[in-house]
Image (cartoon, rainbow, N blue to C red; front, side, top):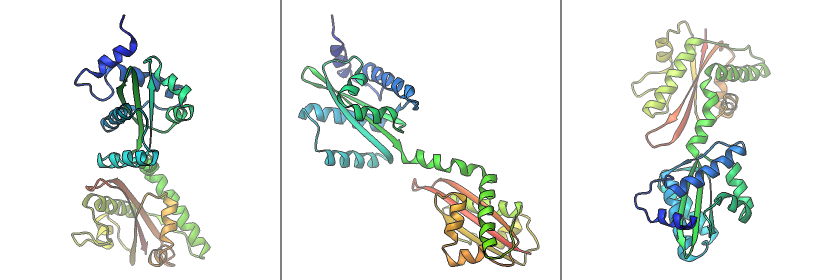
Length: 294
């Protein structure tokens, strides 16, 4: 009879195994994801970058018979993740040396309970699994990670509700104006539209200015949106992953932006926010606030 470990070693020698799809890797992945679901967490999916790292780490443990210096180990994996264009918000890695391929994650719980709990309950989305021979034993390595980009998209999710965004920002502006003894501003849909188009244009064409590359100014943009009759127009812009009330408070820290928010004769306001990834693979959030005095 062929032992379960022998089956694992046979699978290790089979060429062409892809990320997380060899029989032994799949068994461990299924066991691990069942544990995560039982803990109330989302299942993780294999990722090629993490699989490559896990396999190399398992091979290194098998070659040395132990784990490397922890600090050097962490720095090495972190650098490799970034070089592979997998910018991690968080990651963790663990290795197990065993003589049995049965219930591997359950074995991990007994050997490294703290790491197993972190892996089981942590906020991760991807996994890499590596297997290697170590004499008549098996080295199993798991690398778990959560992308920074995933976290960024989660954080901007509330900003998709622009009605809520404008309501919160307007409340903050009017509270500040009330404290300063000024009349509240009214939200104007045409100014909202003009501000939104300018935020999207800056994001799309990768510029950041009150004047567009075509020479359009805040007045041009307001007129193009159908807004008429203002004696005076002003504009605040900002870049950053903020809440709507936070971006207003940040504008208040700048004298020019503060002056626009507290302009005594201002009567109406519009707000736009755009977000996405630029050509440099950086996540950007761009805010535009337009003020009008009639």
